[in-house]
Length: 444
Ligand code: ARG
Image (cartoon, rainbow, N blue to C red):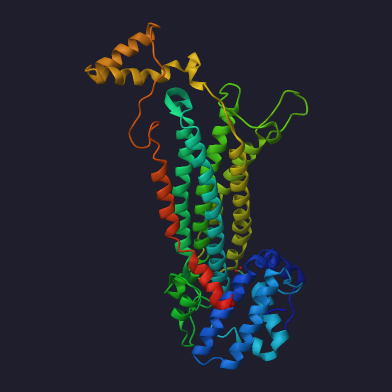
C-alpha cells in the first residue's frame, strides 16, 4: 500500500531499496505518530475540516491503535512503506473513507518530523534518568573514598596529590555538563514542526498554536521552510548530547583500565566482572571497560556521521534524511546500555588503600612542601628553589599530609553543591508536561 498510489507499477527492487530499514525503525515512532495524528485531527475539527462525530470516531480508533502499539500488537505490514502509511491504512480498514480524511493539511515530511521530536523528548527523558542514576552512584563513591589519596598526573607524570573523592566526583560533575547538552537537544526537539506539511505550509487555515499546545511543545518552528530544515539538525543536536555523555564514560573507562593495570594498581574489579585469556592463565582483564570505551568512542562519531549525511543538502525535503534514523535510533539504545553497564561496574569497583604511601609517589608532595614554607614567610620562588634543590640532592622529606580547603579541592569536595547543581538542571526540563500530554490525548 502506498499513500501516493495512483495506479502505476512500482519496481520491486527500487521499492525494497527506498523503504530500506523503515519498517523496523518506524516501529519505534508508532506511538508518537498516533499522538501527532490525534493532535492534528483535533485541530482539523476546530477549523471545520472534520465533523465533531467524525473526530470522536477517529480519536477512539487512534487511541485503540495506541494501546495496540503498547501491547505489542502493532505491525508495519509487508508492502506498507512506513508507520505513517500503516496507521492511515488501519484507520481506513476500520472506519472506511473517514480514515482517508486525516491527512488534510499535512505531509509525511512534517509527520516524520513531529514523530521524531516527540520520540526524542521521551528518549532524552530516559537518558537523563539513567545519567542521574550513574551520577548518584559516583557521588556516593566520591563521598565514601574522599580520604583515599592517589597521585594526580600531568603529562602522565606524577604531579600533585589527588584522591578518589576527587576522581569519582569529577566524573559526576562532568555528567552535569552532559545533561546541559541534552537539555539543549531537548529544547531544539521541543518545537512544533506540524503544519509545515511538505515544507511550504498549506492553504488550509491550520491552527498551529493549537497543535503546539496539545502536544505540549514549548514553542513552534514558525517558518515552515525552517521547520523542514530541522530534519537532520534535530538528530544532530541529540547526537551531540549523546556524544557528550559518551565522552565522559569513555574517559572514565580509560582511567579505570589504566588504574587497574599492575603498574598503577589503584583499584580492582571482582573476578566475576573480569574476563580471562585463552593462553595466559593469570589474566583478569577489564574487558567491560574496554568495550565501554569502544562503544562510547563510536557514539562520539555520530554527530560527524550525521553532518556528513546532510552535507550540502539544499533546503527542502530529501529522502537522504531517512537514513539518519538508522544512525541515531540504535545509538540511543547503545548509550543507555553503556550507562547501565558503567553504573554496574562502577558500583563494583574495589578501591585499594595506602596507595600514596608508596615511595615512588613521594614527589607529589613537593608543592605541599613549597606552600608550607610560603605560609612560614618564604617568598614562593625561593621556596620553590629550596625544595627543587633538595629533590635534586635526594634530600626531600615529606609527611604525606595535605591541607586543601578551597571549594572543589581534596579537603572540600562540595558534594552538596554539586548535587544541587544537577537538581537545578533536571528541574528545568519540565518533564511532567509529557505525562500531561499523554493524559490529555490518550485519556489516561
Ligand atoms: N520515511 C520517510 C523519511 O523518513 C518519510 C517521509 C517520506 N516523504 C517523502 N516525501 N517521500 O523521511
